Length: 237
Image (cartoon, rainbow, N blue to C red; front, side, top):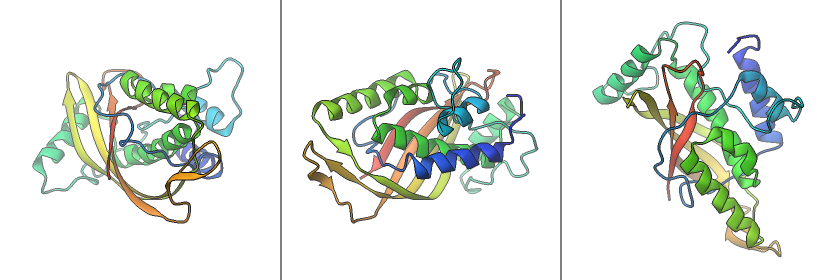
């Protein structure tokens, strides 16, 4: 990463895109994306700005990028998101920090929240091609199949992500030289599935639901690519 574009600018563009264009809700965890294995994806920061803002250069592929770790300063509190009483979680975060000295929990969570909004939006709006760079192979196959099934049945997701109430790291460790971090998202969403006649067949357009999702991201600390990809999802129904 060149560092030419400040991280906060990326979050700004991501939030604009997420709230003004992609404020849709998927049903991840109930329908797809369960327990898959790591693989690298995500690209650079300029690609994220271009893809999310809809101003993509001709030589750039049509994909979306969410950098979850691109750090310039020290992590003053590497356990800032961990329960200090949870020795296993604390040890896992330290293990990742040892393998990648640039890792920063606060910066990671900022990017994770941005990724959460963008991935939900692309899934709900049926943009499988845009999802592909953000997910590992197994999760993408599940998402793409769910989108295909929905389109073939004439169904549409008419859902809104109201806000992310919280995002906390609940698991962190290194396995086979790959860093894995699970984030617990609690969000408020309006979930509506409609048939080809626009009749509501699932959910209520007038009801805000509190939804709990667990998303696992992976990254190879030895890679020059600082980005993370989504490798598993599940939801509490």
